[in-house]
Image 1: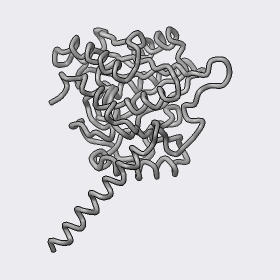
Image 2 (image 1 turned 135 degrees about the horizontal axis):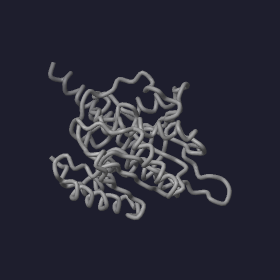
Image 3 (image 1 turned 90 degrees about the vertical axis):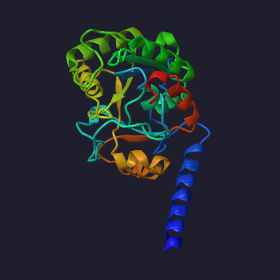
Image 4 (image 1 turned 60 degrees about the horizontal axis):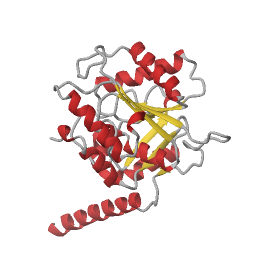
Length: 282
């Protein structure tokens, strides 16, 4: 019996190594299925996009090797995927925990930077639930330095009606209004944010999703392209790089909704950005 367990363990290790090798093999951040049109530069005089990441707390921006983005305007719910039941500790390969911008959106940031786009970040709170708002605010700037996002393109709010907390209900109309201000200021043409579950299940993340949907609907979406970060179940969260095969299958087979998996070929950069959020490491 011992040899069966040893063979099984060796198979798991081999699969994990092959999967990690698949992630690291790309010379630049990439997407699955491959598409020259996904978040591609515009044609004409202004080729670069002005992309706005809308997040809830400092440190929702930096980690992971894989993530899936779906078209926000096409989705009212996530394509039958099981969603995680609660926030939990960090997994270095998939965005399903409650720590950070560094944590959730760094593959998107690195992918967009590789395309030459301008990244702007709107953070709706300082993350002051534990009285560390000022510290977390500064840590976010350091994380953005690592991700090469200029500090003048990062806006962290401290609105009295948008305070961090699991029991804090954020007004969707206010979120839409604040988003509109930054869209006009920065001439935004693309928005990336959370899906309806909010990745970790945090209610502030969920309110961000609904606030952005309200903004898009009230303003007729205009010429703004919108994408959401898909939530995953706990199994897919903890199988690490092995999930690249399942993510690829879902992305390739999706017919009702545009879904792309972004592969972060430089997880070390994400770790460096996440390390800037020292107050959130436990």
